[in-house]
Image 1 (tube, rainbow, N blue to C red):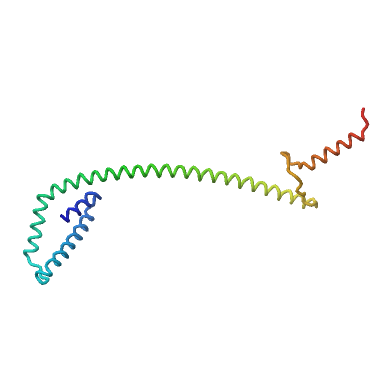
Image 2: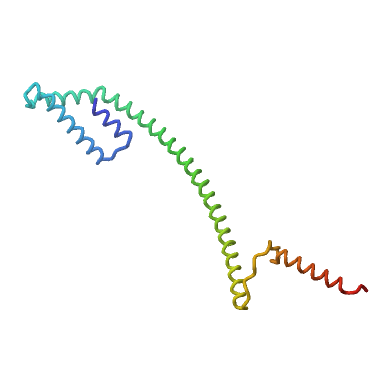
Length: 176
């Protein structure tokens, strides 16, 4: 009956020849240890031929009677378990595909936004540097920060000064 557990595991995992060989070796090693432990108290450690013969005969009888029914049952059970596991794997695959698409979408858009921010920031820095360099070449001081700039780059203070200047000029000119 213990060997049926090995058979069930083999059917469930669809073991190849190498796995079959390794599983059988471990099973027979386990059975050898059990046989020697059984013979130790009764036969003072000596393994008799009738014990090994009885084990082999019991294995064959079980295998040819109940073992066949158990083999069919394990076969049906392993097919059912593999079907359920395949469905679970498909669901997990679909979930992780969707998760991967969502995260890649978010990461892509964040990188695009960061790239745009970096471009605009570097353009503003370049513009400031070029103004400072032009002022140094001309021998002037760098322009002081005064107010907010309009779309054309003229400060509000300069606009006011221009309006006041025109207003004074118009006042001084006689009307025609």
